[in-house]
Amino acid sequence: QIEGDEEVHDNHYMKTKLYMKYVDIFHHTEDQDIIEDVVQRVKIVLNTLQLIDRGCSKLMGKYLMVLVECQQKVLMTKKRTGNISLHDLQQAIKELTRVKLTAMRMLSQYVLL
Image (cartoon, rainbow, N blue to C red; front, side, top):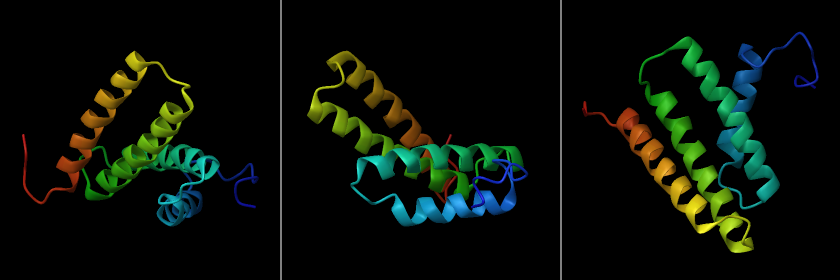
């Protein structure tokens, strides 16, 4: 119901909290449609977090890691069905590895350069 409300924009507190809870609950599922929905919602959460705090926060790292994990699931599904070329697969894996390293730096208790 909150998603259909025109007065509640993507960065609204309640919508962001709702998306965060949705992502926390469903990011471990294997259902492809739900995973793709989680990817879209976690991107909105990350965008909102970036607007609030431009630094490297642990919360941002947590949701960045969730994004990477879900994108890996989508990528592996595409690989199984043959909907991605070898070159595109390699490029996507490189990008996901780079983003995962960034997320791990954010989640680390140590300062890494």
